[in-house]
Length: 279
Image: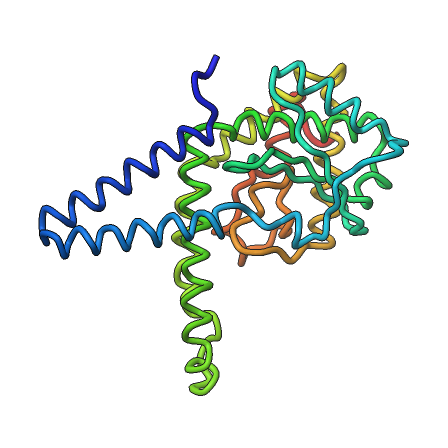
């Protein structure tokens, strides 16, 4: 059993980094260096506080799912959370006609699973249960210290890019240059930070763990196959560095997105899951 929650360990790490910045500043610059180190520490914590978590829920206009539950989603979520001995995540629904599912293991907020109406209308009850199982496992796998730190630092890096773009946007417009130059430059760095904690191996492990929670893992394989086809036909537009939260790649398998692809190919995932492909 973990002695500390992930959020506590992440904050302890960030406090350690902050002290190190100030000590290094003092070592090389005396009192002035200490003050500069303190300024960098304040900037770091402000970036994490305001930008440290993904804004996917608000971007996709997802709402907390309450009241009548014709799909039995809350019961499925509760049952599978108990099997993994984790707290039941909040359930959100997006009214989007697109078929997608994602989960967020927030740094200091309660974790969340989000399903779209398009997914609920297109998948069978067994496939929906398989999707929820996968998202529960995704939260379980990513609720660790390494991802917590990488997540906070990556989104803080993007936040810094957004602030700098706002400061220099009048100049960029006058000179007819890229309107988001800093975000464009810093987004690959943010994604590289995330890739240290979100590898293809994580998705294979999630698939296997979810398969063990289900009566028949073929339902998960069928859900992956359907969702991959739908996302390839109707790719989504998302904020930078957020596609790894989804069960399959929401951007579609396009060559220009090769750097953003965290997900392994679905045919490989299905073959590892049930032993054969195609279905």
